[in-house]
Image (cartoon, rainbow, N blue to C red):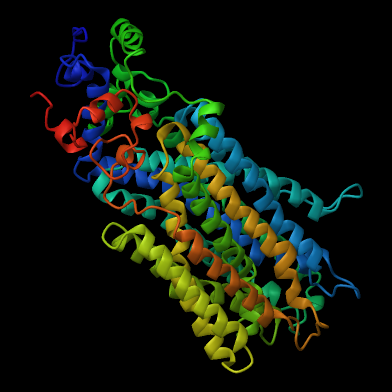
Length: 576
C-alpha cells in the first residue's frame, strides 16, 4: 500500500490519497485511467477542444489563405509585359509547397519529441513558431539581394514546421484526455476547426477587398496588369493584412497551451510516475491545472513501482520490434497510406481553389475589384456548401457509425466523383462541375480528411502514439507536395491560353480519382476504434480481441492461467 500523505481541504484536494490504498501500481494505473475513460462529458472536455481547436483554426487559415494571397502577390510584384500581374506558376508552386515541406519536418520532429520529452513540454512551442513566422511573412518585402518569393518561402517553411507540430500534439493530447464514449467527437471537433479557419480566410479576404474598393476601382479593366499605382498599393496592404490576421487566434490560445498539464497516460506509461499520473487525472476532472502530490511519496512510489509496472519501456529496438510485426505494422501502413492518398487530391484541389473558381465562373469580373470580390465570395461559398457541413456531420456520427465505415465510404464516393469530374469534364458544364466539387468537399470532410486525423491518435500504444501519428501525418503532406509539384502543374500542359488556362485539368482530376481508389485499399488495414479504450486498442486488456500478452507485460502469466477479466471488471474493483 502506498503511503498516505497529510493535508488537503475543500479548496485543495489531496488527490494522492485517492489511490494510496492500492498497493499494485498496475491496478492504480487502470483505475485512474478508467476515471478519464468513463467521465461524463463536461466543461473540461470543452476546454480541451477549444484550446486544441484554435491551433487547427490557425493552421487552416494560414494554409488555405495562401491560395488567395498568391493572386495578390502577382498583382503587386509581377507586373510588366512578361507576367502581366500574374504570379508565375513556378513561384506560385514554390510558395504553396514550402508550407507542406516544413509541415513534414514538424510532424516528424514534434511527433518524436513528444514521445521522448513529453506532450506538455512541446505543446505551445509549435504555436510560438507559427505566430512568429506568420508576422514575419506579413512584414516581408523585396530587396536587391533576395526576391519576395524567396523570403516568403523561407518563412512558410518555418511556419510549416509549427503547423506540422500541431497535428500529432493536438490529436494525441485530445485523445488521451477524452472520455471513451465521445473520443471521436472530441477529436473530430478539434479537426473541424479547419473548416472555420478556411471560412475565416475567405471572410478576411472579402473584408479587405470591400475595404479597398475605391482604390481597386481605379483599375478600369479586369486585367491585373492595369492594377498599378493606388490599386497596386491597396493590394499590397490587402495581402499583408490577410496573412497577418492569422497570428491573432494563435496569440489567444498560447497561454492555455503553455499551461496545459501533462497527459496522465504519458505520465503513467513513459515517465512511469504512477503517483503523479493519478493526481493529474483527479485535477483534470476538477478543472485544476495539475495534481500536486507529496514529493517524498512520489519519489518513493516511482522507486517502488519501477520493477512492477507491466507496460514495456520505449526504445528504438522496441519500436522496430513492435512495428516489425505485421499485426501492428499494417496499421501504421494503413494510417500513413490512407493519409498519403487523401492529401494528394485534397491539397491538390484545395490549394488551387482560385483555379477551380475561374473554371466555374467565380474568378472573373468586369474589373479587378469584382474579380477579387468573386474569388473571396466563391471560396466562402465552397467552404460553407461542402467543407463545414462535412466536418460537423463527422463529429455527429463518428462515435455511432464508426471511423472505418466513414473513411471507406468517403474514399469510394470520392473515387466516383473525381471520375465524373475528370471523364465528364467537357460534358457536365460549369454547374455540373460546381456541384461535383461541392459534393467532393463534403465527402472529403465527412470521410477520410477527418478520420485520417482521428484514427492515428487512438490505435497506437502511448509510448509511440505521437511518433506514429507524426509519421502518418507526414505521409499525407508528402502526398500534398507530390500533388503540387508533380500533378497540379500538369493542369497547364497542352498549350495554356488566356481563354483556356488549364487545358489538362480534366486529366489531373482523373489522376486524383486513381489516388482515391488507392485509399480504399489502405483503409482495409486500419482497425475500428469506436467506443474502445486506448489501452484495449493497444492490446493491454485481457479477454478482448486486441489482447497481446507482450503489450500487457506481466498480465501474460495471468492470461495463461485462464483469466478473462476485462478492463471494466478491473475498474469495478475500485474501493470507495
